[in-house]
Each structure stands twice: as structure tokens, then as C-alpha cells.
Length: 437
Image (cartoon, rainbow, N blue to C red):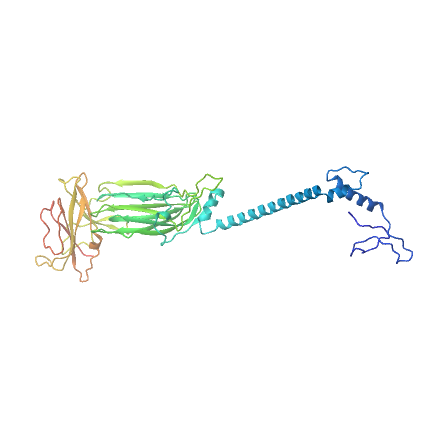
């Protein structure tokens, strides 16, 4: 369409820049506005297009074609329907784009979010790695447990199993979280009943070791001994995994054991969205990578009295022929013997430490701590007994000599610091060493 643009069209008649028709009577010698062929053809085609593009053929005998198109009910309804369809199309496109923008924004938000609930839905759809959080206050409950969780009951944990007296055991559990990373809480109720260690090692996705920490060392034994469960928070990168390793040597009356698992603050919930069949909360595939049981006393040297040096990481022999005048200068950690007539037998043992300030025969032997513990021989009659930790920390402010004594029994016996003599029935006598820290 165009406005009249002949030489005598009246400028700005219909507004600024909008020329129009005028008789120009107010202008001396000026003709009225001329029609031009170009303008007439434009007007003609604009009107004809209204008729032809609505499916009609031009009829030279009719003067109502345009009227019928724009004024009759059928035409009006068709036009209204066309307008409605067009508006719906535009609205649907706008809504779709809005939904796409919203989902995209949420996806970016969930990728870095700390609340894992909505993220697991995204994980099943888009494969997003999800951040976890944990602390020492994370609840120790099945609903927070993620080790070995299959999305159903959450009751899987790792167990050391019962370890007999005199035995040693070590093992490693591997935690490989599924599409999650961040902070995790290791809870390990570890009861070595003697010596023990717990290690946590973390690795990157390609197996590169990132950390290797000894997170707890144990060295104690006694009646009704209960170690405080370990709580340790460790961190994994995306795709990373952890190894929880332990070792223990039992030398108390009870069996060594351990049980634990891994927890997070808010374990993901299960989703099964329409159109997807995958379960999104299968947290990891974990299990015992290696475990070994060292029966007998092969790990200990063939010394009668000895201790373990943390500095050299070796067992050091002590002189079993020590005397009050010539005591050894280190507190014993172990006593070893052999009972040829007691093979694979569980026994009782009395362990006692006393202070002494004068030589025999005027000795002032004074018991400080006496315990009855369980022990056992191997198939060859060998036996190694650990000296309870509290007996290895006796103070000697007056430079007293400490006297350590061990005696084995086939039947249950009792003795306290108030009893002056050891019970009768010792299997191979009373064994004594003098020491001064």
C-alpha cells in the first residue's frame, strides 16, 4: 500500500509525512490532486487480494464480494477462528520458551545446590553429579546411610566379624558413590580389644591417591572395655572413591570386632518420573576388596618379653633375666611362652604390675594393678599375651622398680591387688621381669 504522491498532492494532510487529496482551491493556479497509475494499481491490488486470498474469484458483475467477505457471519467466524488459532500458536510458543528457560535456570541452580532432593531427578534425566554434605553431627540412622544402599532399605554396612584372642586381621572396604561427591561421614564402631588402626584413603576418578590418613590408633585392653566409635568426615571429588582400611591384633579376653557405615545429612529420595524407568538413588557398589586372617602368632618374634617401637616400627627384645638391681629400661608390651601340653586351648591368665623400692629379702612388693584376662594357644602350644595398656603407664615418681608378672591357668581363676599370692594351678609357673621406665 502507498499514499498518493503526485506532484500536486497536499503534503502532511493526514499528519506529518502523510500526503493526501485536496482541491487546492486555496492555492492560486494549483490544480486539484492528480491520480497516478501507480497509486491506482496499488489500491486495486490491495482490494483484489482481499477477495482472491480468501478463496474467491473476481466477479466483474458483483459489487458485494468484499462486503460478503468482511461483513457476513461465516466470514466473520472464519476470521475469528483464524485469529484465535494464531493467538494460541503464539501463546504456546511463548509458554514453551518460558518453560525451557525455567528448566534451564533450575538445572544450573541444581547443579550447584546443596539440597540434594531435586537433584536426583535431574541425575536420572541429565546425569548430573550431585554434591553431598556431612558433619560429625550427621544422624547415624538408616535414612542417612549411603554405603551399599540400593534405594530400598538402606541397611547395608560393613563388618569386621569376630576375631579370636591371639589372632590378627586386616581388611579394606571400598566406597564408590553413585553420581555424588562432597562430604561423607564414616562411622565405625571398632573394638580391636588390643592393637588396631583405621585408615581412610581417597582417590580421584582415575585412581590417583589424594589422601592417606591414619584416623585412629588403638592400644588398650581390659574388662568391659568399650572404645568410643569413630566419626570421621572425608571429602570426595566428582567420580572419586574411598577405601576404609583396618588392622587389629586381639590380646584381650573378648573377641575383636567392628561394624560401620557411611552417612550424609540428607539422603536422596526415590523418584520414578513418568517417561523414565531408571531408579535414581542406587548410591554405590561397595564391598570387601581384601581381607586376611593371620592365625597363630607368626607375626610376633620369638622373644619371651618384648615391646613394639613406634619409632623403628619393630619389635624389640627385653632381657628376661632382669633383676631388681639390673632392670630393663623399657616397659614390656608382650609376653610369649609355649605350653607343650596345651594345644589349641583357651586359657586364663593373670597379669600383675607392682612397685618395689628395696631388694630382696627385705622387698616391699606392692601390687598396683592386677587383671585376669583370656588367652589361647595355637596348634603348637605357642601363646602371646599383651600387657594391658593401663599397666604400661604406671608412674614411678620415686624411681621405683616395676615388677611385671604373668601366670597361665587352664581353669577360671581370680586375683586382685589385695591378694598377696597368685592362685595355685599355674600351668608353667609365674614369669617375672623387672623394669624401670
